[in-house]
Image 1 (tube, rainbow, N blue to C red):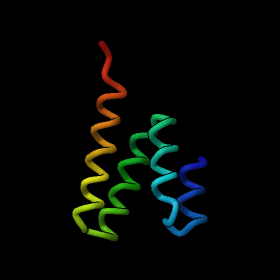
Image 2 (image 1 turned 135 degrees about the vertical axis):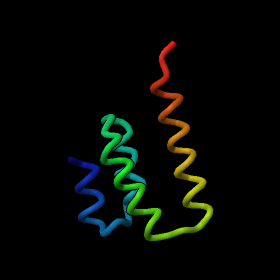
Image 3 (image 1 turned 90 degrees about the horizontal axis):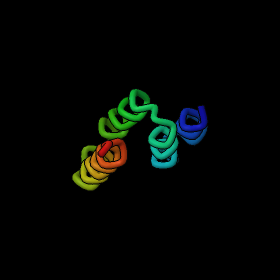
Image 4 (image 1 turned 120 degrees about the vertical axis):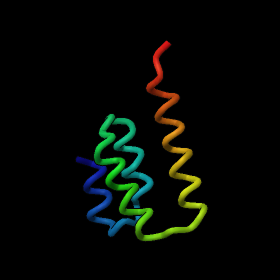
Length: 65
């Protein structure tokens, strides 16, 4: 809920904060949808690099021993 509000009310300017909310809450569907929207809006290499970093962090944090 908070992640969605951050996206909607800030016109996407707080999308990184929204992504963090989605990661913490485990809402991967909304996280991926938000990333897709961000990547569609800007196709630069820095955005892509940050996205891959987030994916890597999620994979590592959800990995079980």
